[in-house]
Length: 266
Image (cartoon, rainbow, N blue to C red; front, top):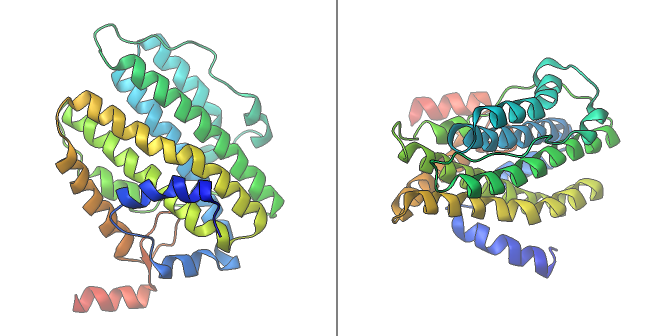
């Protein structure tokens, strides 16, 4: 049973999303044999969220020196994740060493920096916390493949500016909102240490999707509700359609044999 505070946080998220997580996904997620892949993929999602926010800052908001400082901040996390270099326990002491200087030509650069730097700090902290949870459960980090989810969203991003940036921000909002929804769904079903952790994440994740939407609206300067609905439909399809690859943001789980049958008869 979720607290009144959590129910208050999750209600606007549920209204924003176009579907709820299928029961078939939750049934797979709570199986003990799937805990490792669930936490591994959650870990990667936290890093990718930080990378996406950092890309937006570097692409649209800061000068070259600030851009280099951002890359250096993220490098130890990427070294550990992709090259399995370094001790994850040392990541807790890392921080951004330089103030971000906004591009003078951009009206929204400072707001983008403020929101995205905070988001990066929180995502990297969550990354470290997931590693702590994995250690508590005796799960050693190993590289895994990415799910179809984010790529399935981003392939619909327009190729010209500022439309591309607006679309990326909307995609970011849906990814954060889905994470929030799944944390709320999973919390009552998982071991207490993980449940408490996921409930704690709801507070920041609920704000993240709103920050993305606010930035998209600010940059667009006009009504973007149609574009938001479009990506909501895309996101819901990825969540509801058959998916053979179980991950944190995967769709409705089916076996490879079942998927082949559905592909033949569909």
